[in-house]
Image (cartoon, rainbow, N blue to C red; front, side, top):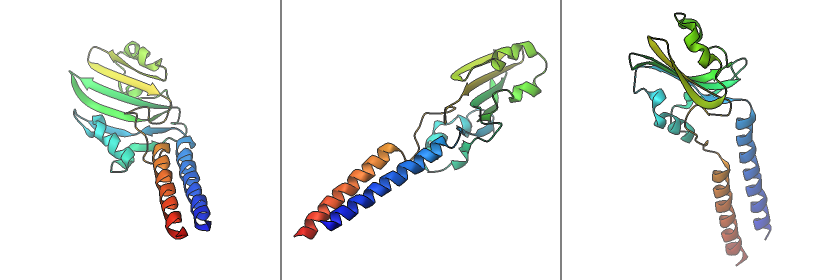
Length: 177
């Protein structure tokens, strides 16, 4: 019976530690997908890039902890010329400055819509007569990509703790014999 109690306490500590570690990762500040590529059909536009990053199977660099002053919003910016993707950018932002802010001076009035865009995760696009620029702004963790959960999440913790408890009960019955 003592073994059962000790094992139960250890499994409870494991669950608490894992949940606390996960909560620290999620509440330590805004976290965004961060990626920049040129051309169409690139890894920044590929769902699997983000799925593998969240599963811990690669592309870890696309998960970024945002730092001031670029910790206000997550964003996605796409820039196209004549229907061809020139760049695709995901990252942390101050919510004010984007690549089109300084690079495209030809028709400033076309970009007012993007400059006034709210952080509701809706995408707006503008055409200035030569270029199409699309922008998405949002303000929750990893909102600028597929909505995936990190590997260490409450569901995984529950499964692991349930398995540990099953093993504890099984071991307890063996040692009582």
